Image (tube, rainbow, N blue to C red):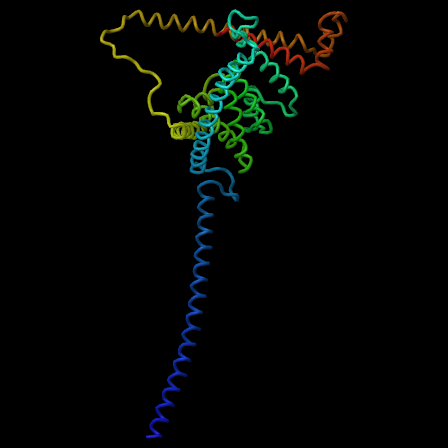
Length: 377
């Protein structure tokens, strides 16, 4: 019995050793499996990352072949439209709140403080209507002249669009701030040109970052500008076509930008409506006509068109001559014609004003122009 018990103890001990050896083997195999699984996970993650990177290169931009394909241009139009829809929604809210602050909150405080009075007082509140835009016009004109980087004009945007396809963006923030304050103060400045310039700068920066050619950079410039104008006003086709026709005298010519500009403008309008929460509805409500219109209404429409054309021509020519007169009043050109002018004339005074007092000239003209805007009220 003792031998049997001793053998059974040895068997138990051997079985324990065997189990321990098997458990160690299992743990070693399990650790190897874990290492292989981790390697597989890392490999799959790296493989997915490479595929995702290749997917981004295929959809948006491939540094090895930077020129946009049609698909990449379409995707950039979608992204630009989303961004412009959000931007125009918030910018419109800022402008609306600024107008309310300048023309509602400030006059109430000025009357409360006794600066302005009622109609029977020494300074009736209606005078605020010309004082406010005049002061804003003077201050903003002075600031514009003092900027180190001048704010581009419509002519400069058109010129750079034709020549190099992009617009310099150093003045984008001053442009946005000054245009917002000008619209809030009641100056005769609409959002169209600031939108074209600011959004065109964004499209230009995309083209510069992705190293596009002049042709593709021009498309990005026009696409962003069309999205900005369309998203702000809520007219997708009108916004895109307005921007595409702006650089030309005879209508649309850059047909390669038509599709991305329209797509981006449509997306911008949709995103703008979603952000602002405005209802999707028409801008005009035409009543139902129970009777037919007389045939002479066509003659009336043609006559109205001719009269409007005549007034438009007179307005444009008058503005051009007025701008030329104001410019020549304060500027001069060196040459023989200037040498023949007597020294005591106003042309000689232009020389002094041009050399030393250009910001003052802009301030005076801005004050007068701001005050004259009340004539339209």
